[in-house]
Image (tube, rainbow, N blue to C red):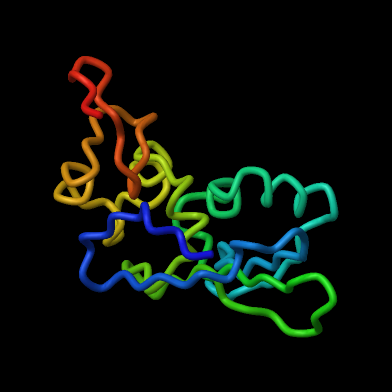
Length: 147
């Protein structure tokens, strides 16, 4: 089931759709440590459940600039799918479930020096505060509702 509510104006940000329709699985994170090399860590079982319930937490639990890649292994599978990838200052692609849950505050706090922080993107989805969503339309509370 593809999420059609995603609004993406960032030209070099691609989307994947591996998480929708899944009921469980495991997450693995590749991070850059202080020494400059990369390290791989698997999420613990309670973290996997939290990440399914709140997809934004998949990329928001690390220090700024540390997270490089997130991989997902569906239940019953023995392979990992990349659902978030960052190379330098560019996020190359992200799963639609993460995009739908991602807030402006997470981007401004953790990914401010990447292509995710884009004022044109924020304007396209009517974001006004850090609590607003960054890739799905935000309803303006003061605007009249149309049927």
